[in-house]
Image (cartoon, rainbow, N blue to C red):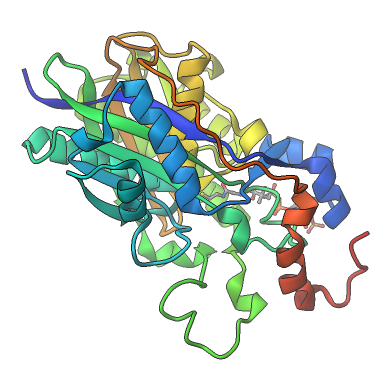
Length: 367
Ligand SMILES: CC(C)(COP(=O)(O)OP(=O)(O)OC[C@H]1O[C@@H](n2cnc3c(N)ncnc32)[C@H](O)[C@@H]1OP(=O)(O)O)[C@@H](O)C(=O)NCCC(=O)NCCS
């Protein structure tokens, strides 16, 4: 039987500081009702540590779940669009910290589609025989780019990390088909211009340039069409229909997008995993965190057909069809935690509020 890439370990790292809709009401002209109705989001978690710290803990948890020693990994891939530095990669830092001494390491940036793109790379490496055991992490610290007085963007995003261990399997479980796509011509709808080579050497650090630029309605439409069409293509490639799907784990961008896209596909809500209410949109981290939550909630059974589907900056989109293996329980548990913090969300956001204040000079101050 064909060699496939099977997920044998899963884990997540949710940073401890909560940013609720009530907190956002203090920062901008918005309301809990508006945010819930338009996005399905009630809360997001913010990180007081760096992207690599989140990635490392999610990785350790996924390895324990798989019962695997880090030294047995052949490759570490981190999907992120918010690395704390550009070089070395987050993947190389994670590789060193967890002791994956026999593994290569690199980062991959497909924004919110990063985990789907990463899964396609991992599957290709494993199916070709170039690797047998691969760790794929999605990790983001998105709040650094948020202007928390811009109500059209900052209400959506949160921080976090999720990870999966993939192993070569010969029993039919694993990745069945991949669909990837992009339209760089629409890249201007979601921009983070800081951190690239255009950023650091310049004399000014202009908040108008630094903050996330985002055209919500345009992205919404691209997302609904993109996700539905991509999921149809991946099913076709796998020789499956929507009736065969046991669970869709979509990128958690907006509950309305997930709803519209899955309705277009004719998939009822019972077969869609949604955890956006508590975590918001965590870009490349959202699907692996959702996988971990779905397993914990008992929503995945042995042999299930699972579809992962995402869209994001670039713009990019993609879907994966996979068959779950025999195990839905962790082999082991890593009980490490992030360093504790006493900070509230508003403490943590002070640097953002100060940095973006010049863009809001005409508005009343935050209480
Ligand atoms: C951002 C988003 C939630 C905005 O929702 P929307 O229903 O499109 O809202 P609109 O932009 O049409 O704005 C409608 C009104 O609400 C207002 N509004 C926008 N944000 C608001 C907020 N947080 N609170 C209250 N009102 C808000 C607008 O100013 C506008 O007011 P107006 O009619 O007086 O001009 C939605 O477009 C979205 O989720 N887009 C995609 C996001 C996404 O998935 N991104 C991830 C990419 S991976």
